[in-house]
Length: 165
Image (tube, rainbow, N blue to C red; front, side, top):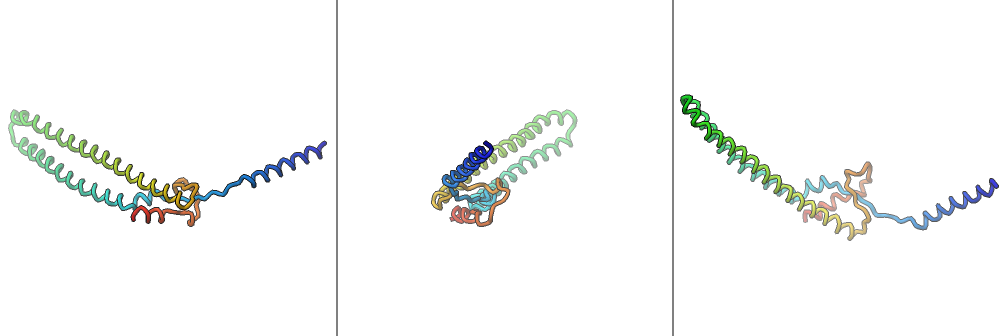
């Protein structure tokens, strides 16, 4: 009886091994360093330059508002108590205007940046998808998800080359 159970177990194990070989499929897998692709993409660099230029313009506008506020405060310091009290609402209004300017500028930059980043990520996704189909890859992973990947499986350079054409 023990031999029969052992024989059935061996046959079952052999069947499982055979079945595994029959149905095993080879997958073509690679990975891409998406952070590097994003950072080195020409559109990302153009976006950064654009934001830097816009930031400088906004900083000049903000400095002008702040200088006006400073001038108002300096003038207020020379006034009598009654005149100081009368000037305070104008100073408060200017302070609120600077705060509104800062908030509005930040919100505009965040929205524009999010829209632009979304567009860039769509570009990257399209290139990776097209490359995968063209070259017959089954799976392309983000390198940040890997604990290890052979260097010859890294498609970062090829993806960047295609993006920056």
